[in-house]
Amino acid sequence: MAGAIIENMSTKKLCLVGGVLLLFQVLAFLVGGLIAPRPTTSVHFLAVKCIDIRKGHHSSKWLLPWGKDQCEHIRGFDEAASRLIAANDIVFSVHIPFSGHEMSPWFQFMLIILQLDIAFQFRNEIVENAMVTLDVAMAYRDDTSDPWTEMAHSVEQRKLKCVLPVPKTAENEGRYYECDVLPLLEIGSVAHKYYLLNIKLPVNDKKKINFGIGEIKDLHLVGIFQNGGFTKVWFAMKTFLTPSILIIMIWYWRRITLMTRSPVLLEKVIFALGISMTFINIPVEWFSIGFNWTWMLLFGDIRQGIFYAMLLSFWIIFCGEHMMDQTERNRISAYWKQVGPIAFGSCCLFIFDMCERGVQLTNPFYSIWTTDVGAELAMAFIIVAGICACLYFLFLCFMVYQVFRNISGKRSTLPAMNKARRLHYEGLIFRFRFLMIITLACAAITVIFFITTQISEGNWKWGEVTIELNSAFFTGVYGMWNVYVFALMFLYAPSHKNYGEDQSNGMGSAEELQLTTTIPNIDGPTEVYRLAGKESQE
Image 1 (cartoon, rainbow, N blue to C red):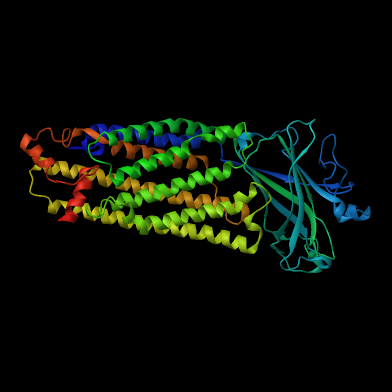
Image 2 (cartoon, one colour):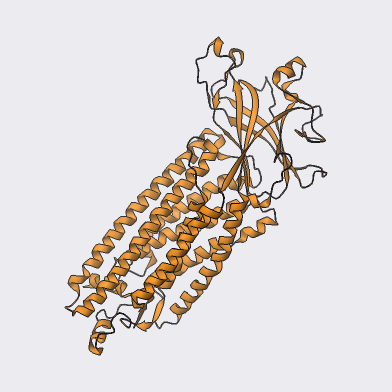
């Protein structure tokens, strides 16, 4: 009866394989820490106040803040009042990027958040639940001589959440409110070299549009992009790792199919985990360099969600298959209580993503954070997701403890054996325990990565909690997933050797026969797996 490589490979060779995988893991961290720049870059823009002399907003041309065709602009609203320029004739214009620079598809995405400078005045205070209305349009071009092409245009509302840090007295008139940042737009592709934003604050006293929003002095925009250098390193890692996982996956399944028995659930789940890892590895992002694929952010989230769901389900099944007896194991239906919530949570993640990034495919100015209900739901989702991730890890720790206790009981149930055979089994159990500890470490880092990335992305929208994630964390965790999946498929692939061929060369033929027949009539990938089923049967 052939066992798995994790059991039949000699300790020396196993240590060599482990050392190579550890080296790749260290390299994954070093690539992010020494080669790749920070994952994202933020650039601050101050909007130029242009005088709109056109008939109909954005009907004929765009207002440029600088350059040959720059607009006629004013310094402030005091100048506008002295020149009798109405508020409806002022357009805030921002050119992205700055003069002399170009945007690049290597930036992958563009997120713009808005910060308002609002001065305190008794005659124009910010009212409770004030809403600012933005008539915003975006255009692009790829050459400075080309005309601007409209990309998106929408009238959006954002709720102002401002606090005056000083008492409201006459002496403090002119002091600025402290206001929360406002999400303005997000696009999943930076396919053009130049972008232009024209923002208008329409005023209508009868309809109470932009009424009670204070005295706005300036508009600041913060553009957040993925670093081009990090993108190149990320693409290179995906390109290298894709064939590695694909080859080991094909090799693993070929060995499974060559066996006389049919694959058990654990072997099928390991193969499914390899498929999900390959799916997330395939570097389809290369096409985003030449094509304007605005759905890449959403597609990336879907791939990530599928992998998360598969990885979390695998850990539950991996532990469960070493705890159940032979009549209950090898059935996916036995895990519906554990896998069901994971599938439900994944569906919630997908729905949440579609509610924002799905809508942004047609309206990049949309954000779920703009309303009280949407913001509360989004915040609650992040908090609940973090709590569920922590509870999952605690439950997984409990399952690993149960597995360890179950495996430890095997020593008392096994028949009396000589020293060589006992050492052999102790070696198998030690290898299995070490793999379980590595699994727990991988799970802990994955949970930390999930929570921190959720908070980091949310911070761009609400701007309260700041978590800086460096490139080494991204490349290290991504490399860890690939190393872990590679190791599972390699170690749990059927070996062409018989049990004990390397570990028990000193045993006689009778001892080897007794060793291979100690656990009869139970099929499985490893001897520890069959041992767990035998105790439950007894």
